[in-house]
Image (cartoon, rainbow, N blue to C red; front, side, top):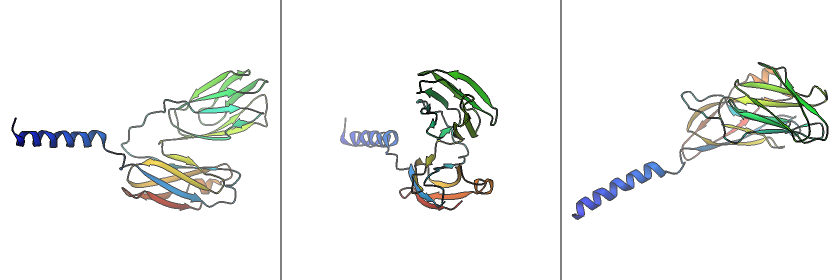
Length: 201
């Protein structure tokens, strides 16, 4: 085989290799901060509302919300629509899991170590309650994309692996008012740069 053919084949191989194994440079990060007086005690969920045409799959690993010390832990759990959430009873006493929101459900009671599960097929916020212990409350925030994050006590957040483009951000927080929840925020993600935003609900 002559040198020209070898060079041509090498170039074709290199092109195919780059196509198949290109680094995730197209996926960038949105960093930001939510300015709100309640954020230190009550974290806020920040998420991209939707990406038209994107094909999304529920995560293989199931999100978990524990019942421990008569509390839902974590108190706020954001998940992708279609996810199955496991509710694990870590207490020595019996617990119940129910939600009156959206389609509503009552998963019944569970003893120590038992797991109750639910598939969240619709986006929205679901308050989690225990019929046996009315003081218990948690929240599952079901969103339409896998691009979401929770704020830290300083209000900072980071959403990773975001495709380039202009994206509409929404927020949800336990202490935010309905008018604040309806607000839209925008982040323009550039390839190789990501984006930084400041959100004031």
